[in-house]
Image 1 (cartoon, one colour):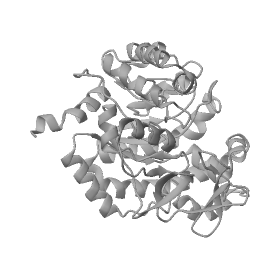
Image 2: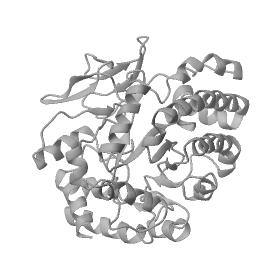
Image 3: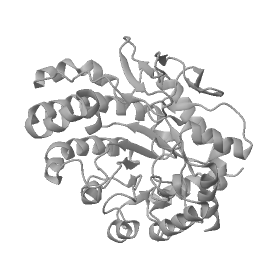
Image 4: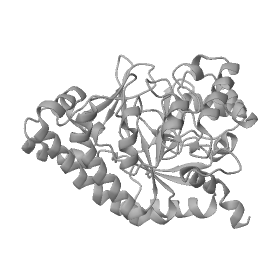
Amino acid sequence: MNNRILAKKRDRIISALNHKGSDRIPVDLGSTDSSGITWFAYDNLKKALGISGNTRVIDLMQMTVKVEHEILEFAGSDSTALIFEPGKWKTYEFRKGHSVEIPGKVQIKEKKNGELLIYSGDGTPSYRCPRNGFYFDSIYHPLESAQSPGDIDMGVPFMEYYDMPQYMDESFSDLKERAKILYRETDYAIVANLWLHLLAAGQELRGFENFMMDLIINKKMVHRFFERILEIYIPRIDKYLEAVGDSIDVVQVNDDLGTQRGLQFSLETYREMLKPYQKRLWQHIKQKSNKHILFHSCGSIYELIPDLIELGVDAINPVQVSAKNMDTRKLKMEFGKDITFWGGGCDTQEVLPYGKPEDIKEEVKRRVEDLSGDGGFVFCQVHNIQPDVPVENILAMYEALDEL
């Protein structure tokens, strides 16, 4: 296969990020932790397509999978994820008759009431999934009792593992080799999933309510928290980019800043408390890698988009079209020359799970027409495909895209 053909998928993504057209709309399935598919829906899709093989759950919190090559090709995906993986996998049965593979070092125990607990390395129960549930929620907030900036310093060991789960124990050298093979032997655009949450790190480690109040009444402690976690993230970025920088095309970073109706806090609070640290983090990535930055935030973030553009963000995901002020036509008209919309292709709150196939096709047509002009658009559904989505609706979404 010649180099021109090998580069085609990759070129589609890069063209979209550079606001240029290509032979067709680029597509993503599963190259980020918020553009993928949960294991139950994934297994149903594989069954419908007659695809066998083990399903690997790569994100235990969201129960999303490592998307296999056959499914990437079915979806027409032009990108794929680069993420730290476990050294070994093991089989686990989340539902009777439904076995998947999970990271080998994960410690899951089932209680008498049927709920599942994930334990950290020191034996602390850290995440909980209710009986017959589909997700794990955080239940351990190690900095919950912090009262001062000094208490934050004592919590640095817990920050060390944030966004780097201990059970994802692949070495940097193994990651480097896998990235080189992906880049050399496939034509996918490779998305480096660095995560690197700032706000969410505070909300998880302090507890959501505590940290949201800290932003207003305990600002010195928040600033200390952000300083300390940047001291952890920046050396991690340097080591990561040294290993795989030549084999990646896009760097993904995360923080959920929106809700269904607006921002989690005022624009003034964002600019005072969070934006300066995002600026330092993202500019460091740009200077070290010269790669495009894909920023994930759920919710209504319309007010923040000018700030994100100013900070050097090249694309936003998931483009939550059902949230306030996130109308796709309006977003494209106002910001389409300056930022790429990586998502927004089909609403996943109402249309994809509860609509009929014809509703899905109308939704896809509308969103593609709104977002695809003059490049600057990568098609994927809004966030991950959830367990309750009928397989015929997933098929309808990709059929609609093919027809367009």
